Length: 344
Image (cartoon, rainbow, N blue to C red):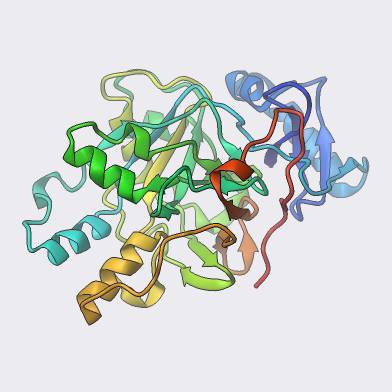
């Protein structure tokens, strides 16, 4: 199944089941009004949702044809957005460039976690603002959408709580991050709201791409139609997906609707490129002595798409970068943009 949120006057939108080609949506108000409500009652309503999804796929019901701007982020807001650094290659490259010691290998399987902004996820098609930064960067991440996870849950217990996966662009303001960390202020101002792919995809939709421990897919990112990279989400990750969830629940329960990011996808193989501009710049500096790829600026077109082969997993994220005064949409105002899978 593909879960989406149709744009309505209410902040959380309307739960819809989305066809694999992202062209049709089936409202299921009689089952659950919102994605959040569905996640909270998943065990109770999953069978009913799957039956409705089958009616949509078979053509028994037509659904509603989707047009540009119809879909919000599938979770327009969430109880928690927790991110971690499960791909250590980027940190290792930065240490290499700076001539500093890399992270302790003994702790590599336990990456750092932090709480990000969960009060709003930006939809595909909405603009991304520079927010006064000269170093706006993407961070393309695999994200897990969870049912309730008990405090101290084991990896096996955590695995059963995964409802589905999506893609999150963990927007970063690199210059703000550098200056604020140097001043001892932390990362608060450098991490504005993230954006989220158009749908949440249940694990069965992944087929062999989900092996119970890792998602085998490639995270493609383009800036102005130039491919930045396509790293593999299953390669060079320091722990299994269930282990990461269990680590996140070590000292707190995770409430249904929690979104857990595995960190910016990063592979050691330089041929696959990167999922953020910072990594691309570090690699260029190590190879040539200086970076050539610039950060995002107004007018740029950004596309992020997690793919298994040529098939988009959750639909592409597409954003135009804008100056600060051009950004912002009300809850019920459709943005300019697309929600469909990117073709290149």
